[in-house]
Length: 126
Image (cartoon, rainbow, N blue to C red; front, side, top):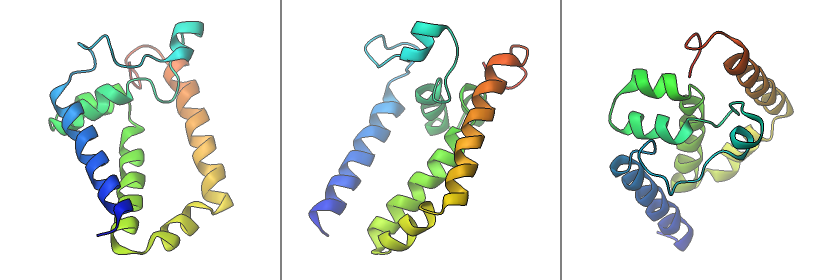
């Protein structure tokens, strides 16, 4: 196992165990969203820490309610991790360099951010 794989695996395990044990809604020392503080709106990542915590506890409805973008982010992370571990890193990264996928992801993030701030509370999330 290469040093890169060891670092990636250890980091993944540490972050996962940390968010399993720490409830972000109860921890004042975790980073807060600057956009939320400055403008009072939810960015695309708001609620991501809580969503990950709920996901690890298999509370999928709360994870979905906290930030539904967690699920595609986890799939992308799993693809990258798998590519790194199997030696097919270039194949995975080539897929993500596709300009149409990039445009789709940017549009998805913009639409998600707009909807979560302008739909009635509780309709989409938060």
